[in-house]
Length: 367
Image 1 (cartoon, rainbow, N blue to C red):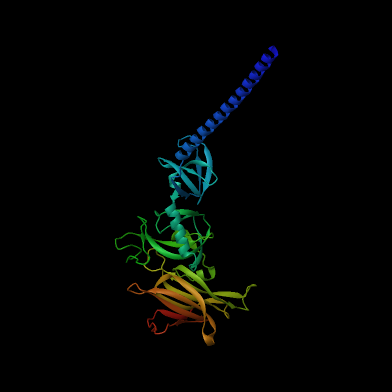
Image 2 (tube, helix red, strand yellow):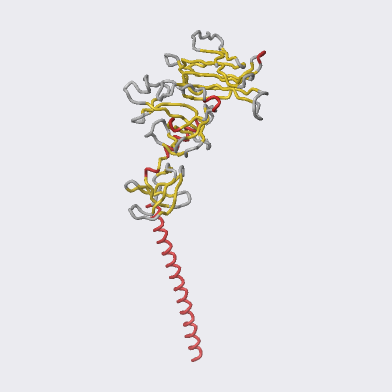
């Protein structure tokens, strides 16, 4: 009997010990689960606190991210021009942002532009991506690509001094207020001013090496006109130039015997004029004298960019270089004028039913 009692007590003791350990494991599992739920709750609160307000883009060449908005702070990261960031919070003139790599920090709001500006520049790029280049050019200073002509208009991308760009179009904007004057309806002005007396300045629509398109202040851009023809500017301003064709000159010094012949659009050296150019000149190469000569000049034009250069077959004359000018009349209507170059003669190509212009504004074979 005593042995049975001892065995019974022993079994009960073992069962109690096992139950104790099971209960302990259950409590531990419950504690871990509650701790996990607590941490998830904190994480959810943090996510709600750092919800994305909007998407912005960095308009500065480079800007630092700080850990706090105060006089004393630590730099936690760097963002570059055009970089996309998520705005998490705003305080005074700062925004808390998160980069694509997950870095969070505060940045001055003046270094950011909104999604609307970004989309506007993307649309401007798509609309002008295939526009004919009017002239290659080089930036004189660091310049911003603006969404529209004007110093105070929105901009995003920043180009460095010396960057090569392609000039596409021209427009004017009021110098003081930066309000754009629509190129299609230029204000009637004299001396680069609107009818209300506000000064105007020229802007170029340019495309950079990355195919980004935007407006740049014209005085920050130097057209890359070949020196051989730039010397014939005669105090005028080159607006556009094009290679029409090339001729072979056996007697020319140097290894390259081919010489380009050019069409140039020129205007007075003033900003704010109501036309893009008022004169065109064709420079052909004299093989006997080994120099450029003015084969054709036409002035008094109310020219509108872009100028188009192509080629066309003229039966017995063969395939010749052709250029098309867009010219505006006194009523504001724009018409096309086609010309062909059969070196060294430039002639107007009339459309069916078109009458020849009898104005004395064209000159042939002028040195």
